[in-house]
Structures are given as C-alpha cells and as structure tokens.
Amino acid sequence: MAMPLITNLVLRIVALILLSGAAVIIVTNSAKASVDDAIKFNGSVKTINAYKYGLGISVLGLIYALVQLPFAIYHVITREPLVLGNELFLTFRFYGDKVVSYLLATGAAAIYGFAVDSKRLIDDLDNLVKKGGRDDLSHLRSKYDHFSIMASLGASLLLLGFICTAVSSVLSSLNLAKKRSGTTEVQLSY
Image (tube, rainbow, N blue to C red; front, side):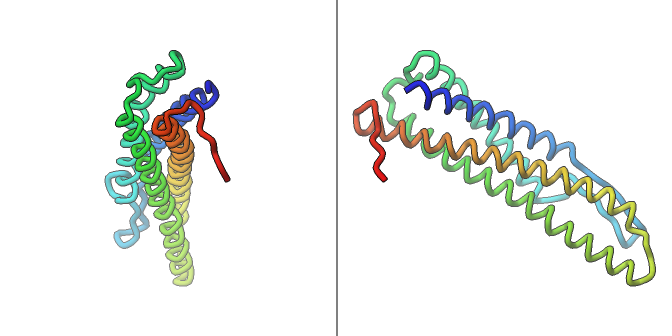
C-alpha cells in the first residue's frame, strides 16, 4: 500500500521540478540576429505562439502539481487521504491528472514542432543564400541553432513532465477504483 503512495509523491515532485525547468528555459531562451533588412530572426516567448502556448501549459502544470503536492505528502505521512473518503476529490484528481497530462503533451509537441520546422526553414534559407553566392547566414545560424537546442530541451522537459503526470494518472485511477469498489486492493485483470 505504501509503495504506490510514495511513487505518486515522487512523481508529483519530479513533475514539479521538470515543469519548473521547462518554464525557466522557455522564458529565458531568446535569440535575435539579422543579416540585412530582409533576413531577420527574433525568437522569444513574446514572438513565437508555440512558445507562448508551451509556457502557459507549463505554468498550468506547475499550478496543478503545487495544488496536488500537499495532498500527496499528507497521504504518505498518515496513510489516509486528506479529504477522507471523498469520492468527488478522487474524481477531480483522476480527471485533473488526465487533462493536465494531455495538455503537457500538446505543449511539448507544439514547441518541438516549432523547433524542427523552423530549423528546416533556416536550412532552406541558408541553402538559397549560398546558391546566390552569399555566405552571410553563419551569424544567424549559430544563434538560431542554440535557440533551437534550448527550445528542444524545454520541450523535452515538458514531455518528461507529461510522463510523470500520466503515470500519476494511472495511480489516481486505481485509487478511484478502490474507493468505488469499497476495497483496499484493486484486482487488475489482463
């Protein structure tokens, strides 16, 4: 009985750390570079919609993790849920874990999709400029490559936060099933 409680607590703490890291990376990662008036890159949370979405989702995940953490800590310490016997709370946790985990996955996908697509566009632009006989994109490219790597890192942290929340969601479903069946053990059939 204690192992799933500790696992749930650890997952919520790890998710909190991962989502904090993702939010910090998203907010602080920016790059500005230009070759001339026609070729400019300005990347930040202020200018990229996928980044805005990812930041919003990571903050939502952080808030949810912070709300759930005291309940998980209390449950581990006392072996009783803080909201004792309240099926409504277990249902909220069950659906909350599911919704937040899926939103975290979409935030990670949005940022990663932006990073991959824009890298391809920079590569195409670099090839086009080189065909024109110019080699002016090296400064832009180095700044963008760093920006892209950091964006992918932020997306990876969001994805790992999704995995922690999704596993916690499975544990929430087991707790809800236990409450509804009136037993302390849930028999899993395959």
